Structures are given as structure tokens and as C-alpha cells.
Length: 211
Length: 211
Image 1 (tube, chains in turn red, yellow):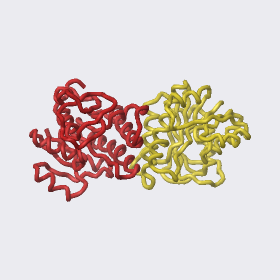
Image 2 (cartoon, one colour; image 1 turned 180 degrees about the horizontal axis):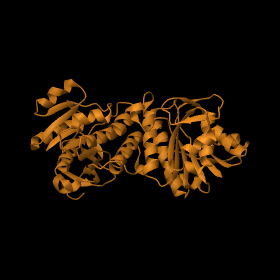
Image 3 (cartoon, each protein chain N blue to C red; image 1 turned 180 degrees about the vertical axis):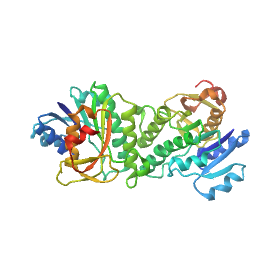
Image 4 (tube, each protein chain N blue to C red; image 1 turned 120 degrees about the vertical axis):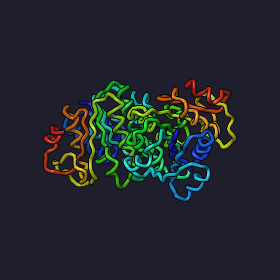
């Protein structure tokens, strides 16, 4: 499978690219800066400059020819909320539109635990608002074969290989999130599904069969 | 007609309340602060505390019993983009949900010229993003009898009484925007319509028949 990773140079993105390559998938790493090129090419991934500030028509040209798109980009905690609106919401939606324009059906997005229910939003509310409406657009305004993966609080611990589904609190290692994305891409049972993930005891491959 | 104005103490809101009262409508001014009460009650409007940070269930209780809801609230240029997300996007959507929960059908929102087309967004992009997705929600995720009014650059000049429809640039006096809202509320031909407004030569009452 040939996978385009939007946000490849992010914390989850880097882990995801490595795991996809390990599994034998072809990867195109979407990067913002040519300086990030060698990091990915040395591992065996292709790279493409991909700018979330572009219009979908331009973005679609870059995506063409892959089997699946993963959106794991995030504006991050260090930028302003203008970037939350422009990257996490509108950048995500433009990526969906571009995927459709490129004739690709499969789209996997990293959202956030509880994004669907605003009564559960506590800290970083603007981020939840952005995720909430991006997810809604994906479900209701596109015909993509989507999966929405909603991790709990992200950690940099080593992956545990086990998760639990659909809790409303909990943490999860980024490495496990990447493993869930890989398993999701290779399991069509996850199409048109959304689910929360946190650390737990069910092996990832088994858990994605239950979503 | 009994109209609830969300954002009554805003620049358009104040003009709107006065014009509705002039026309003989009943007005409930949604206010954020009890200090704003006398301003409206002295004119003959009722007031209700209305908090866009509440959940829709709470907001619905306050809206109950009116014929129409107007959303003319805005986070304004002086607050951060977190407020753009929380007020202009999620606050607007919660107001729509609350209107539905209260059993009210009619909902008029003040959006922004070009909100539908991101290739035309120049300055204040986060504001357009918020307006874009709020409008989309109203059209596609509710069953409200909506009207989306999209003014050009707002001025504090005296109203001219004439507008033109669906331009992509231009300015308009807030007083004229208020007149368009009043005419829209009283013209069912505007239901399920969205249109841009800027200053022009067509009398407002005539223009709203052509949307």
C-alpha cells in the first residue's frame, strides 16, 4: 500500500513513517521544508513538499497516485489559535477535499479523545473545537472511506502494544497511536468508523477488529 | 413577531434591537452582563442573560417562547483567536442547537462576505474559517429555517437604505445590515437562503425579495 503522510515530520508522523516502512508499505512523507527531506529518504520513504496553506487544487496534485492519506498534522501547543483554525480545522478539511480531488478514497485522521462531545472539553478548548468540526466535515460532507482515530493524552513512552477502545479518559504512547494507524490502514473493517484509543490490554490488531 | 437577539449589545445588535422595536416587534435582548439591562429595558425590550460559553441545553431554556433567533454576536477584533473558535464558530453552532432544542424554527445569522469561498479570504483568515464552518453547520446539520446574511466591510456610517446583493467586495453600514435583518425576519422568501450584501441602490425591502 502506498500511503501519503500529512504531518510526517510531527511526533506521531515520524513514528508512523518508520512503522509503515517496517511493514513493507510505500510511504510518501509530506514535508514543509526541504531540510526534512533526507531524514525520510535515508529511511527509504519518498518525500513531497506539502503546504496546508495552499488551496485543495494544488494539494491534490501532490497527493495523486497514493492509495491512502493519513492526516497526522497538528499546529501544536506552541503556535497561536489562529493556527488551530488554519491547520487543525481548515487545513484538515482542505486535505480531505484534496484527497477527493485526487481520486483517492481512503483517509485516516488523528483527532482527539472526546472531540465529539463538548461537555467533556476541559483544557485546550479551541483545539477540541477545531477537531470537532473537522471530524464532522469528514463524516457528513465527504464520501471518503474515512477512519477517525481519537487518542487520549499523548505520551512519549515506549509503545505498549495494547489499547482499549472508547474510553473518555486515559493516556496513550504516540508509538501505539502510530501502530493503530498502520493497523487501521490495513483493515477495511475500520472504514466509516471513529473510535477513541487509550492504553490497555487488547492487542492493537485485535482491537481494530472491534471498532 | 418576538425576536431573541444574541449579541444584542454588539454594534449591529444595538441597531437591530432599536429597529425591531420601531417596527413594533417584541424583542428579547440577549446580554452578557446585567449592567446592560437598563440600556435595553429603557427602550422597551425585554432582556435575558445569555452566555455563549454554556451548553445548548441551558441556552435553550432562555430562548424558549420566541418566534425567531438572530445571531449577531461576534468575538470582535480585540480578543484572541481562541474566542474566534469558541464564540464565532462553536458559540454560533451551540446557538443553533439551542434554537432547535427550544422548538424554534427561524434562525438568522450574520456571517461575512466571501465566507463560502476560501480562495477569497485575505485578511483575518481565522474569522473566515469560523464563519465558513458555522454557516456549513447551519445549512447541512440543522433543520432550521435559516437565513445567512453576509455583509461586506462594516462601517459606522448612516444607513443608505439601499444595497446590492452577492458582490465579492464592498462595504456596508451596520445600520443597513440591521435593516436587512429586520426585512429578512419578515420575509419568508429568505428562508433557506444565503446572500452577501454591500451598499447599493436597491431598496432593502425589494432586495430581500430577490435573494
